[in-house]
Amino acid sequence: MLIWMKKIQYLNENPSFISSLFNWRPHALTIPDKNNYQGYIESITNKELNLYIIKRTILMFGKFLFFDFLIEFLLDNEPEIPEKLYILRIFDYFVTGHQIISLYNFFYCNIYLLLTYVTFSFGWDVQIILFGIILNPLLFIKNKGKQSEENKSYITHIKEWLILTIFYTKPLVDKPFLSTSPRDFWSNRWHSIYRECFRDLFYFPVRNFFKSNRNIGYILGILLVYFISGILHDYINFVAFSYTKGYSTGRGRNVKDSLTVKIFKIVIFLSVLSLTAPWNAEPLIRVRYIEANNTTRIFSKSVERYENWKI
Image 1 (tube, helix red, strand yellow):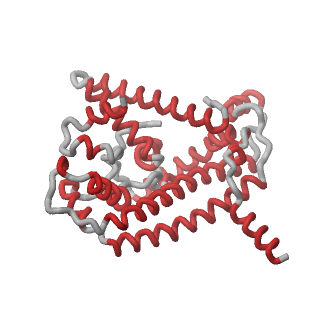
Image 2: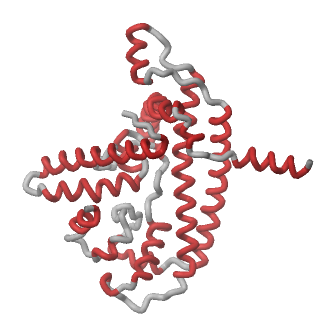
Image 3: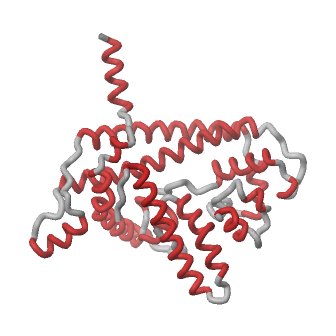
């Protein structure tokens, strides 16, 4: 079904369907002139690739240390989480005046949210570095003149896809802490692979199917994306720790704001995001998500092994 929907998407586009199978994020490119993307591909050299891999490796190592520090803190300072859901405690506050959440628990939940971002960002760096290692020997294979999409070999398709992914594709998460609105967060900055795949595989085909009534297609496309996203997230929760708990395609408009207005919007959105952090983090803390996934403490274990070695 997914392949059929992808084929429907590419009926009116130039790339062949076979070549499209290597790229499930065709609208994530950051190339200024997409009509001349071949020129950008051929401009990449082994030296440039190696320097880029070194740069990403340094960034990845820094994120890894920060990730390990967050894991150490969260495992060693886990608070008691009330049984009543966060949203119900908010309603209860207006009725009985009971405290919604302690200051420490609120801080802990926000650190948990920060760990989610660092995890996604670290994972993207690891993926890019692995892709770079695979691409390195492929760059020595030169293309035989100008070829149409249909006549390109699978090796050429893979090489071009790797170059586009490493150098010219938006990252998995793009500084979500700079979001100016929920639209900006979901449409441009948070988990772009999910968002773009859902949009390309479900929203666009449904919208295009109802060409006679664009509003109906728009509404049904959005509803289908929410439906598929909900099933996927519940499935992940169930598989990860046998737990269920009860997203947006967005048009991603580019609103040009002054610096003052943009900072004001970021502060407002971060405040809302921070206030909703316990809503997302508390279910994971209750089931000890970090421990359930056997997340290891690399730093403390290394220190322990070093001390044992000295003894």
